[in-house]
Amino acid sequence: MIVWSGLSLAGIAVFLSLGIWQVERRAWKLDLIDKVDRRIHAAPGAIPAPQQWPSVNAQDDAYRHVRVRGRFIAHKDTFVKAVTALGGGFWVLTPLRTTGGAIVLVNRGFVPADRRGGIGLPAGNVDVTGLLRVTEPGGAFLRSNDPAADRWFSRDVRAIASARDLTDVAPFFIDADASAVGGPAGGLTVVSFPNNHLIYALTWFGLAAMLAGWTCYLAKQEWRSRKHRLNGCGRPLLIADLSGRLP
Image 1 (cartoon, rainbow, N blue to C red):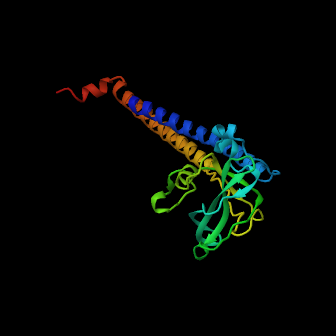
Image 2 (cartoon, rainbow, N blue to C red; image 1 turned 120 degrees about the horizontal axis):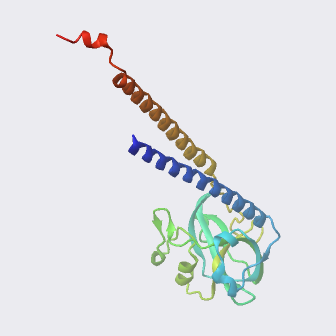
Image 3 (cartoon, helix red, strand yellow; image 1 turned 180 degrees about the horizontal axis):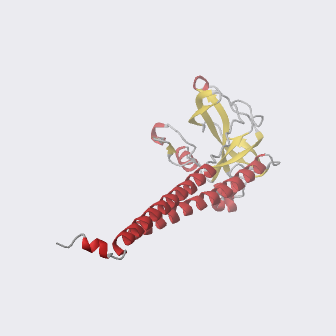
C-alpha cells in the first residue's frame, strides 16, 4: 500500500502539472490570437529593413500587414502546390525587387492548374500590400520540396531563392491582398490557430481527480481491513472460549 500510495501521489502530481501547463498554454495562445488579429487589421506598414532580417520570427512578425513598392522580376515565378477554397492549384510566388534594392518573394495568389502558364505580370513599379509570412522550410507533410524537379509543396524562401539564382532575398514572403496586384487570386490567407488547451487541461485535471479518488477509496478499504484484523486478533480471550477447547 505504501508503494501504491507513492506511485499515486506521483501520478497525481504529474497530471496536475500537465493541466497547469495546458492552462498556461491556453493563455499564451489567446494572447497570440489577439496579437495576430490586431496585426491583420492594422494599417499596412513597412517591411522589416535588411538589418532587421535576422530577428524576424513567427512570434513577433507573422501576419503583420505590410506594404512594399517595387518591380516584379520576370521569368522567376515559382508555383507551389496549394488547396484553397477555390479548389486545387498553385500559389504563384514572384520575386519583387524593392525600390531599396532588396528582393522579397510575393505570393501573388492562387491559380488553378490549367492557368499555370498564362497569368501575366504587372509592368513597372507596383505597390503591394499583404501579410508578412515566415518561411516554410522543407516541404509539406510527407511531401518534400524537390527544387531540381521544380516541384514545390511549401514556400521555402531560401530554397526558392537558391533555385532561382536570387540574392539579397528577405527571409520571409508576403501574401498579397486580394486587390494588391492583378492576375492570381490574392487575399486567401487562412489564419487559424487550434486552441484545444482548455479541453486538454480539463482532461488532465479530471485524471488527477479520478486517481486521487481511487487512491482515497483504496486507502479507506485498507484501513477498514486492518481495523477488522486488529479487532479479530486482538480481542481478549474469555474463559468460556478456553473451556470449550480443553480436552
